[in-house]
Length: 343
Ligand code: 13P
Image 1 (tube, rainbow, N blue to C red):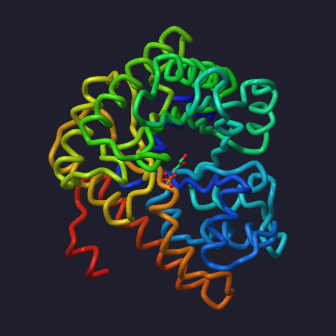
Image 2: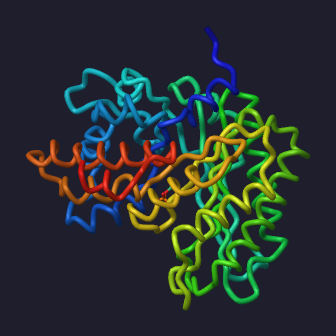
């Protein structure tokens, strides 16, 4: 039976499940591998990602979908028996694909960025659909610094997100709409209140552009930042404050037609990302499923445990399964420090 956009979007944010962001570009994955002294070859990238996608317990129980990079959606397992896409499908996890071409300096807007990748996107989406992708991701980057972000930059990024989302839906692909207000930009000294204001403004403009582009909100997944202070902020925020301010901001901006919101981790520690999500779900009634679409906060422990050594695969898979399980609990508001430590 053909799945509708709404079916796919709902499956992506099903209770107890969330998304693994494994779509690091070649440059970003090299940085991650540098941190464990592993050379970033095509084979090493395949081995690392195959290790994650073959972690059956996590993939079956807690990972509804995986965001892939172009290289990975075309790769096969080391023994050549199946493609990595078939591997995740056999665990019931949906393949997704990053389709933006990265954030570049925006002409005339010093220090601000606009995400590239609309040219030729329709044809690329058709190709990715043939390769098995049923959802896609496009990330806009909004940096907070004195005097920025400007309305012009937010508006241009929101417009690109909306055009991307419309093209995805035309091609049977659910768009993950990701406007990321950075917590770790070049200055990153802003307060949690400033993050709230900038995120509110950004989300309002994004949903206005999605409406004008005739995007069906029931067939998208929103991937926002949480409301947190910049990483160099003078004043820290408590976990409860992050959870409460994030939900307040989302309630002010996100229509209830949207089936789910899957957060990015953005530089939070593994535990922070899990705790914040769990508190949002345990403390609030919300009209959407709130879950995770973490990159670093799902992979950091596994990457470290692996270290590029085949003998460490089991330990690395256990680390990944643990984080996936903890975030699965958080998506139901059921994570606790005691469970974190006991398992
Ligand atoms: P992080 O969770 O590491 O922020 O990555 C998620 C992502 O996909 C960013 O675009």
